Image 1 (cartoon, rainbow, N blue to C red):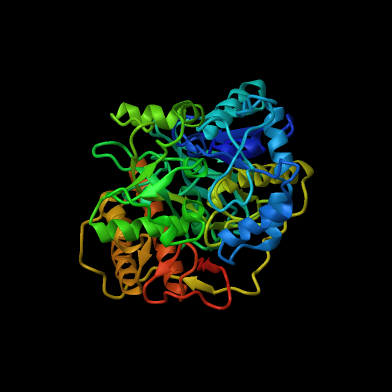
Image 2: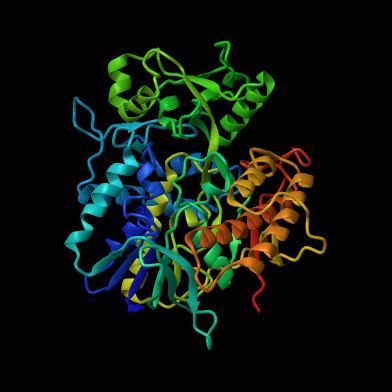
Length: 527
């Protein structure tokens, strides 16, 4: 089956919605969802969207906070561009009737504080900001007859012009209901497929976050950058037999403190900002304390705050914990780090354009240069909107294609192959073994011997996968596993290329930060 559109958007989270709802109504638009429309990482975002909204805040302060959190690796021009568009992004959401939490006295937007921010600038909808935003925007799709939503479509690979291999023509997808392969053609294709959390055993990401967009773009010839920087959220619920659930950064922003199992506070021992330090510092501190004490978690305590205040700010967190027998108004929350956000991704420019003509990328799949070595809390929803709307403007104006510029100061620009001379003998290939491999060898603290061993095992698994994959009738599990193998390999290669510890990448072989900050760029070898 073949369908023709003007623009194909792969993904229904905030990045994809920002593109779809910003394009003119004369555009024929297809939104492809691997699962149900609502099942996105954006829907699970609790904290909020960072924006310079308060009159006493400033772009300079927000930019500086982002650069500090990014450990010197942010692209300053990209940071300034996105931060300076933050008020417009928030106005766009308000114009689409997104209901943010407001102050009781003056009905102005309630702005909260999160780790790494020097000012209250996080607009939020209680503690379910992502759900409120995505539900509101998705409910508006029906008002646009030019937008057609295709649920249960798992994208397999991008379609390329055989005579012009540097041009994307659309995507081939698996209809999960009929098990048929469908072809979607368009001059513009947008990857908005989210992150890579499912590569790890514990993650706050939804089941669909298997790195699909990054893998497809890589196989089509696009560069990727900074794939070693995987943000582990410091505070995910760690109750026995309970699913991984994010305990928002805002809990610490509103006064929550981290405790050892014996009830003593530990974050002041690691950073002067204590619980409000950037996420990479907090996650490593928690990991260190867990290893010291031989425990599976630490404690996050907000119970010293008034019950009414806790219920007002964190109703979803309270209800979820209570469903597992824990009242956060009286009892500390057991928490541990979990894979949360991919700071690197497909290299794009301000307009969202990739190395492949006709292919755009936005959101967590993309590398804009905003996050550097560590994402500042609540900058991600902002990035989705600014980049998504830039893409829509570029498509509507039919501007000439501008391939993202080469980076003059880079850690590693190289061609990568996946050949392994002596395939490793180890665990059989399945998704659980892959996740265990990444957890043990590419977690919060790493070393080069482990990363090299993991890369060798991945090489053997990839050979096994491509030898036995039933590509004539692909299944969802096969599609996802192939993408996960590709993206895991990219992460490890980036990690091995970085001979320092910076931000989210900490290796015991090179514990110090290098004097010069440079991104890790990988370029594929195309036959």
